[in-house]
Length: 364
Image 1 (spheres, one colour):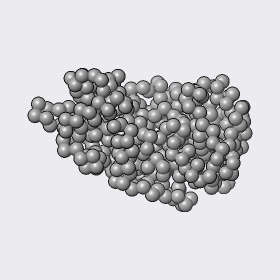
Image 2 (spheres, rainbow, N blue to C red; image 1 turned 30 degrees about the horizontal axis):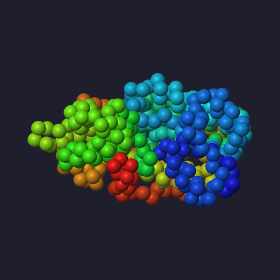
Image 3 (cartoon, rainbow, N blue to C red; image 1 turned 90 degrees about the vertical axis):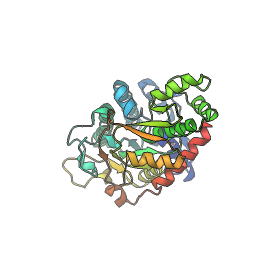
Image 4 (cartoon, rainbow, N blue to C red; image 1 turned 60 degrees about the vertical axis):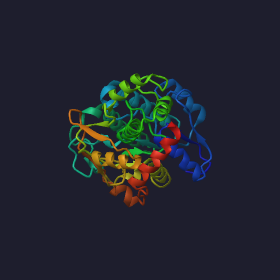
């Protein structure tokens, strides 16, 4: 990419998109094109067509997606498969029609089988059944990988796909119904600490900033306590607070700082092409995507304890085994990426502290 290339970052307000924009600006890229959802609905084929014809971007980072944690993925199955397919189909197809030089499609490691060998190599894609709770989302992302590969092979485009592990960082989604595990734990434990300290000013400020189940800080205490209990935050008559966490706490998860993820994406756009992702002379070209992660994982229970320590919550963490665990282990094999010359820099304990500090600034 050249410093004055026109670069479209789709999903620039999301967790990864904001980090990609920041990274590009820091590295001197000055001609960035962004659109809010209100300005450009990426599920609208006509609108996307018009945008590409008018703007003619040289490069595209496709970070836009409908995302969420285990609750949202399982509850809104139709929305997750439809919206993600529409977004990526529109952007990838019109990038081809308008001769985009290079596109980077961002997927997710949930594309790998439920019982995938660990760590997960790129070649393990489509070797077994998927985890049920996020199957629609995973199928959409697999389709995106195959769409990039297929367009490259038929139309000689230069579209690459990367599969990030679980991400966290500034601008994450802390909605308790739709968030991933890290921000959900941070918010619930933060509210738990406020509850045990009887800090209603903090509780009201928090849910004014981001209402829970339609309830904001203006509601009476009983109503607020009722909605908090619905999302696993309860207080006994003696004032002790309990935070419910779905599952046994045993599943292992890998977490990558969003700004590290953005740096990896820009690194690949600057240094790699589709033809570099498979051996020359291959009769069958598949699994050309690249995992992006740390190669290190932690149990959900240990993550919760780490967050509890960072926040200073002294209440009880209750692991509800009646709720689904999801896949028990999801660790990426990052050999391919590391061999290309990129490695993560943010350590988890420091990252949790930084994202909590960022969260506090926004919810007080």
